[in-house]
Length: 130
Image (cartoon, rainbow, N blue to C red; front, top):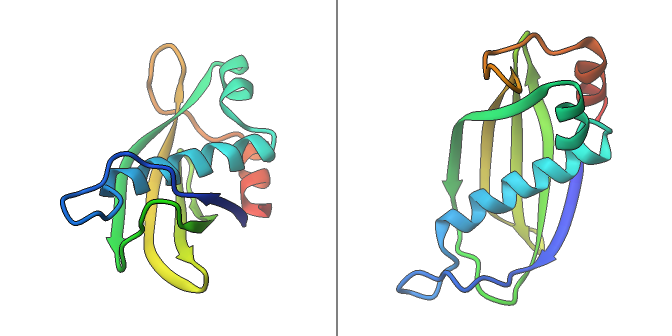
């Protein structure tokens, strides 16, 4: 599991002053990238191996709104690994209150052809241990 804490600094608010829903998706993607970097399998390492991760689906359930300048915490972990896909889960909290949970399915692809590739054992192992 990887945990990121941050303060909301968003200009994109909706008409009732809540943080725009698209911001949550960006926070989740950024947290996933940080987690992958921390495990040694970030974008740069994958590119060196002619690999890339592509998101094929996002599923987000909004429970409570977030507001500008609030301190939030995002937790992310790998839920499932298959031959070519990883399902990553997320939870976003204000204090101990769950604001949102989500999951993303990521597919590993060849960097040039963009065709799915089998996930190497060393990447699977790193992700499953996280």
